Length: 91
Length: 156
Image (cartoon, rainbow over all chains, first blue to last red; front, side, top):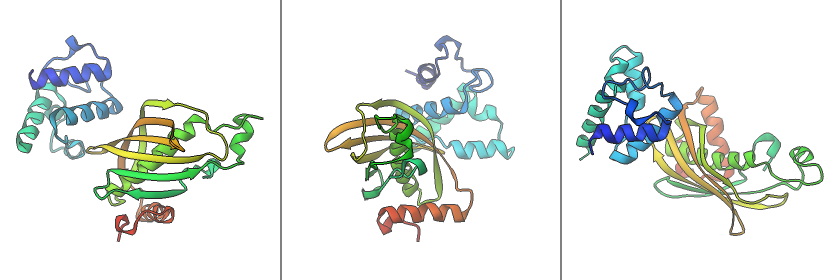
């Protein structure tokens, strides 16, 4: 199963968003409407699934400082790329 | 245990070396204004205060894990089960286990038993944020010390 499929399944299970609505170009916040509390549950599930620790605080700080756009981290395909990078770095 | 002041933990009994487990004890007071309303003539500890007791034990665990650099705020209660009534005078054994130490959040599993009998358990999610100021952080660490948190876990 691809990273995208695993993450989409987690989001669907956690937030009750229909699985078919989750696309690689979906913005998890702007398009899927995931709120911060549901996002905590999703990050928890992703951390466990991939054995990583998504650096949410660092990402948020970069977005707030204008060093990155929310799309860089929170569009599904980009989020999955970051997850793959974190998993590879840990391996 | 002073229910009306939300002082739910009487003593921290132990924390393991890698700060993933904490055990604590409390005894439900014989009298409390809380029991005047919950319920008149039938005093029972409100379930939300049992959740709060598990949250405070978990909070001390997570704050200890961060060296009292971050404060915990309860944001989620999952699989909460309140298994039996808790009456005045009941001794409580509280345990908290760190399930996940995330970035900006933590998840624990917590439980309360009394004389070996399961009282309640839940999975609790916390946001971790900076303390509002150093004075507040010291007050919380001092409170942990008063409750018996071993000195090696306290800020130097």
